[in-house]
Amino acid sequence: MIFSWFLRFVHQNIQVINTALNYAVSQNQECDHLVDKKQSRISSKQDDESIEIVLFKSDSCAFCPRAEEVIRETIEDFGSAVFELKIINVTENPEAAEEYGIFALPTVMIGGLSVTGIPERDMLMKMVLGARVMSKKKVVLK
Amino acid sequence: MSDHEIDRVKTGIPGLDELIEGGFPRGDTILIAGKAGTGKSILATQFIYKGATDYNEPGVFVTLEEPPHLIKRNMIQFGMDLESLVNNKKIALVDLSPSKKVTPVTIGEYPSFDLSGLEAIILNHVKKLKAKRVVLDTLSIMAYRFKSRDILREEFFKLTANITRTGCTLLLTSEIPAHHQGLGVFDIEAFLASGVIVLYNEKISDTSRSRSIEVLKLRGSKHSSRIHSMRITDEGIRVWPGEISSGH
Image 1 (tube, helix red, strand yellow):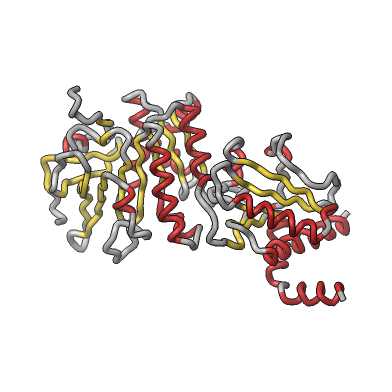
Image 2 (cartoon, helix red, strand yellow):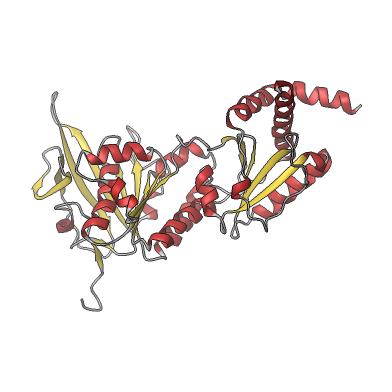
């Protein structure tokens, strides 16, 4: 049942997943140096299999709390062990926003792709699927 | 200076201060509008450069369009060495151009965002340099990066207010699209600013064009209502206050 849903989802979104793949290959980023130790992080998985989700937010951003909720709910549904959520508060760390050229908040970044505004779950799932396929590809390449 | 006199910021553009009672009112937002190739970016960069070199006013130049290495290369032609000012922490060149390598590719936008990221980036540099001048070049590029124009319009008001609240004088550049009657793609550019300066590069014959400058509005100032000749010389932009443009 779940498998057939997964196949249907991949089939319907193959173009987006392909785009995600291409960009993830060329722009896969690591943001460890940008994240404040105090800032939150789900999952302790530190290996190459974890998918990094970065949320840029600020103290004054009214939409950011809801964006964070949607991301956390999506992660829970997917299985949180696979993900690493990094939250960058640009009020405390404006250099990170500058480095990544992030003007608008909230912005969610997965691989080399981003979405601005409160994201819809479907969009997050498309991005995650792209990143997931990418991570499998990395293993094969090894 | 009397209580009624407005504190003025020297523009660093020879001839321009004479048209506007000595300079831009300090802490105001000024819009520099013009079609492509009229000299908006040169004028804005000269404002930052001269502020740092001649008036001891540090400045922050935020580029949303042209990468910094090209701005530096172009301005050195006018004898303006931006690199040394950056190294001496007199100015900051903030690269938010699309050419940045690490900028993620935006694949979706929902109409629930603000520009607090851009604000945090700019205010961080203002604070570090104790800047007195800020340039945002160019506002128009935002129309191509974001679809939600209504949100952008609202956010521009917040952004400009929060920058000028620090005491900085803010210059915004705006590109007027070809065959466009307004001052930019958002149609609210004039409302954002208390001063509007328009640059022209009009064709006056089959073989030549003429550059000119017009102070369209400047609140609190008795400014010239004429269109004056302007040239891009070896030392940057120069305005001839006594010369009325032949192109108009």
